[in-house]
Every structure is written in C-alpha cells, then in structure tokens.
Image (cartoon, rainbow, N blue to C red):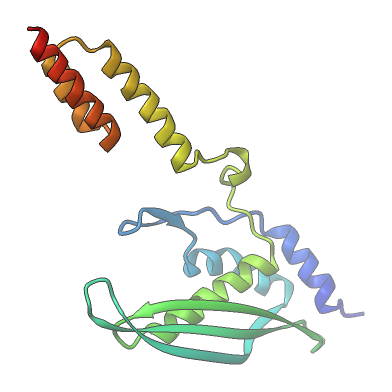
Length: 191
C-alpha cells in the first residue's frame, strides 16, 4: 500500500534537522538562511521520500517606491500557494508570502524566492540552531539612556578639572552639558 503524502511528509520532517543562518547581509548587518541553503537541505530529502512541491497559484502586487538614494524601484509582494504531492497523487497545499524591493527586473523572482524559502522553513518547522531570541531581553533605549545619564552625571560630580569636564561634555546629553558648563564656570571662578 502506498503511503499518503502526510505520512511521507512526516518521515521527511524527521530527516531534516536544521538549517543554520550561514549567509550574511553586510549592508544591514544580519545573518540569514538563503533559499539555496534551504533547498539544499530539503531537496534531497523530498526526493528520497518521493515527495515534490510545485507552485500552484502565484499572486503578485507591485508598488513603485524610491530607494534611500532616490532611485526608482519596485516593491513586490507575492502570495503563493504551493502544492505538495505524494507518489499516489494525493496532495496538500501551503501558502507563503514574499517581499522584495528591486530597481531592475529581478523583483518578482526575489519575492518568489523569499516565499518559497519561507514555505519550506515553515512547512518543515526548520530551526536555525541559533540561541532562542527569548533567552535574552534587549535593553530598551530609554533604560540605556537613564543608565548612561546616571554614569555621566556621577562622573561630572566627581570631576575636579576643566579638562575632565570637557571630556564628559562630549558624552553628555544637553541637560548634562548645561550642568557641566555651570560646573566649569564654578571651577574657573574659584581658580
């Protein structure tokens, strides 16, 4: 008896462990999993289990935009349905979206690549093996500013030379700079 597409898909999921974020976007300084890395991890497993996936319905929306440098570009958003087939012809569908901005003729291809990568990552629930983002909490900007203010304010109180106060002035916010200016006047008047 032929296994169902769902049974084969579950077996394929067991064979794919993770896809790490091995590529880096140097412009925006972040790591990512490219479509090739994901397809290279998933493709052989699909073939091993007799599964295949094809785009079934692809929709795209286009919006003219400008880059930060003022060049015209196209923002492309896709919503694609992918159909997963087993060897018996049974299937199921998944939907994924993609988005890209391009100032040439590659916007749709890029958005479709993002959608397909997202489809594979979500359908197979592929982890990155990176630390869980919930394992740490980012410090909020206003908390950091409060800490920096307290540190600089303490340094200002301990400073006893005009040179040291000038160093601190460059690190300080406007209110602290005003306090430093007043303290410099007091030091100069006392000298």
